Amino acid sequence: MISLKGVSKQFDGARKVTALDRIDLEICRGELVAIVGPSGSGKSTLLNLIGGLDRATSGEVVLDGSALSQLSDDELTRIRRDKIGFIFQFFNLLPTLSCLENVSLPLHLRGWPRKKTAERARELLELVKLDARMDHLPDELSGGERQRVAIARALSVYPPVLLADEPTGNLDSVTGLEILDLIHDLHQRLGSTVLVVTHDAGVAESCARTIHIRDGRVFEDVTK
Image 1 (cartoon, rainbow, N blue to C red):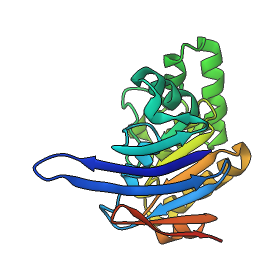
Image 2: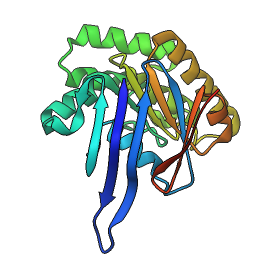
Image 3: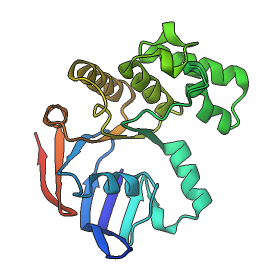
């Protein structure tokens, strides 16, 4: 499902920084994988390359049979739109839109009919147990509820790949556990390949596989 071969990423500035250094990695369809490591180890950079948000300096990232380096910017945009759901630490909801409208937005951008879009958005909000909050604005929700809306939005096209960057990092411990349980439940229901970048040992422990990144390299890869 996801393959990285000799992937490196360098950032040029006053000093050249190597964020990832010759990463080789294979992730199978339907796996639930935690990516852990200290700050600056390259975890988020790895997720961004897999998600097509950035391009590798060298090596190849293959996602569901597509070599990302061979794609144009428009083709890469379509891959992100059709095959990848993103969950971020800070929710990134539009404050002037209701929950229903936030979840509907990616589908509107795909040109879905209004009725079909509304039906899918309601279905997803029900899936994340927010059917009673559909007309609320983000500021009227708790942190956990906002993250649930963000997850519903990420699932709008039932993507085969779900990438979560510190999904519990901005939440208290109890709410974080609720969001983690939700991610596990959705993984089992939808069968998506899920990658979770986390500093939380509890989150990593709950995943069947944990990839440890240190100094831009895979330090350890453990499957329970």
